[in-house]
Length: 113
Length: 111
Image (cartoon, rainbow over all chains, first blue to last red; front, side, top):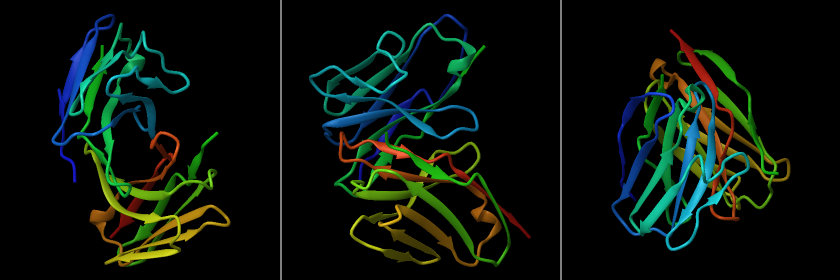
């Protein structure tokens, strides 16, 4: 199994600022995924981060708003840029297991005021 | 596109069985999962089933898969108040290995 550490676990940010969320995995993985869970909603995939290439964004998400870095096989960051209250959500990173599981970090609870 | 649907609420009495249902659209899904999320907590993987199986049992949990109808269910036997949570169904898609989640079913267990 994979152990995923996310930082920060929570933050309260001013609108117009940016927050970078870090995701560290205890093993090397090819793909890492970033999800958003808006209040009372399900999880929505933001993007897939592959090491050595640009992230692949899902419909409705763009690189300017959610830039992603993937400098190596154990680490990724997601930045939420120019935040507004609508960005208040839980952001989770995930890595696939050996085809049987998907492992999730504990999430970053973001509140934008 | 890919879609996973669940009913939003289920209320049962303690000791009864709970059945949470899920439908999905992409027949190429290789794995289907059930996650539990308690208030303020992260996602906990409860169980999963591979697409070539039709049933999997794990203690109080039974997963049934009808691949023809693209229907998945989670049965919790002897439901306890500690089972109160939101349960998410998710499908793993071969394309990119991403998970598509249902809306979540809020299970309320009354004493």
